[in-house]
Image 1 (cartoon, rainbow, N blue to C red):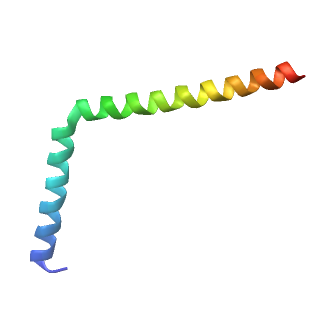
Image 2: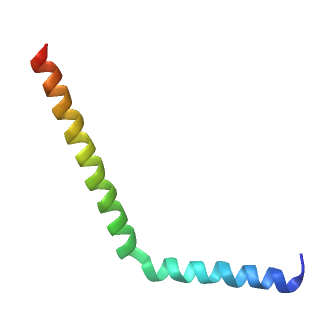
Length: 57
């Protein structure tokens, strides 16, 4: 690897780190809440399907 390329790669990684830090806790909280919403929706659909099946049986 050329030193210039290595420096560019390091700068890129630092930039990514800065962006992640800027997103920070707010971003993490938003992402987790979105995941939670999706999981609850899927679970509700699953439960309603199970209820339909149990009614048929």
